[in-house]
Image 1 (cartoon, rainbow, N blue to C red):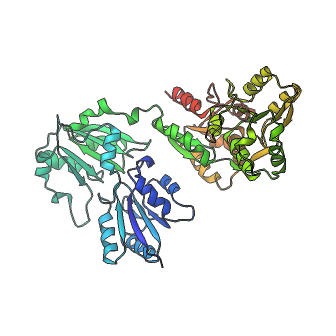
Image 2 (cartoon, rainbow, N blue to C red):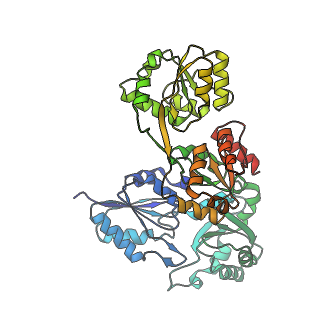
Image 3 (cartoon, rainbow, N blue to C red):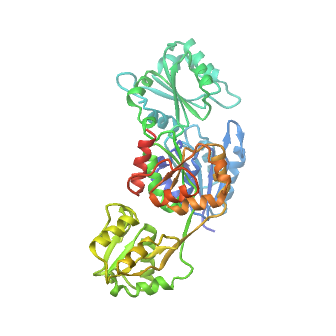
Length: 504
């Protein structure tokens, strides 16, 4: 049997981008992933689909799986010859009980490797705009837990040294005892007006930061309703927040959007939204699959030597066309002399990734703009190949044929409605937890409507409908729903730009 091993990996404080490259590499190779409450579940997307995923988290003392059982689970899976990732919030060795788990494994001869993570205290400070050290203020800091073992009390801390001997104090898990922490520090010499920052859900778009003075912060937290998980930072460095804050100044900070594109195509869009501070939830309402009959597309590809222009109107179309080109034992040489037409920048980018530059990208990134520029060139007597989606509008076909072109328009791909997504979307909509739903094609909306029918009007709540372009907006308005915004150009970049302006 192959030797099993456990990897204790720090998942960081919440922002999935803070996972280390080494952590991501081991996560992608794991047979088993054992994760806790503060490890962002988005990170599970790096694991293999076949990997066993086990949740062992705890929330404010409510243990989903006791620590002793978690330890045994790690050892049992590794002893069975499996590669086990223990994904822990923050850093495994900073208030994460990683030392206890590593020692347990060591005692039983189980190989264990630790991959450090970004600890919550450091990340919370950075995302709140607070430098933990500053040579004009302090060069010392301490990491402390405000919730120790049941048999140890906060009173066991050396409050006199903490109050006067260190500049910046970072308390983990201290919300329950914040009043006592403040009282002890003031009693032992820390000034009552010392600045304090409490940072809830650090590094996530729901992050909240409350700044106050040491003598009032406990009451302020109760008044504002801040709850765990939160980091408490005490010291003069907190004064730099107003000057250095950046994360909660991002234009879409605090906004939550549902992305309905297929997951593999949503990556770039999600990244654009997250760069602007938004929280994104990707629940696809469409799935891209091959046509039921590939013969028409294959037959058209075999006629490339007679084709004058190839029209591609999406990255999906590009992928489907080149997959079948390869299946026919052909390559890029088959496109010699063929005019390549891309409906917009993203389709053009998909072509460029295959070593091809489009000859035409219309100024207006939609079917109408594409047809207008082709007609201006003249298409009479031309033979045009247009691999399309099964439910694509017939505008391109109709207009080009009217102008005298011969158009081959085989179905290159079709979209179907995924199953099992209704409950997740229903929860988000009924709880009014969404600011907007992003639709990137008519079918993304049509399928959402098919999931819920008339119930969608009752569920919609405060979630606004955000459309990528005219055809998508038309599909939404046709069903008597309002479109909150539509960008000037039908690209994801322009949609994000329009969202930034809209929510400013």
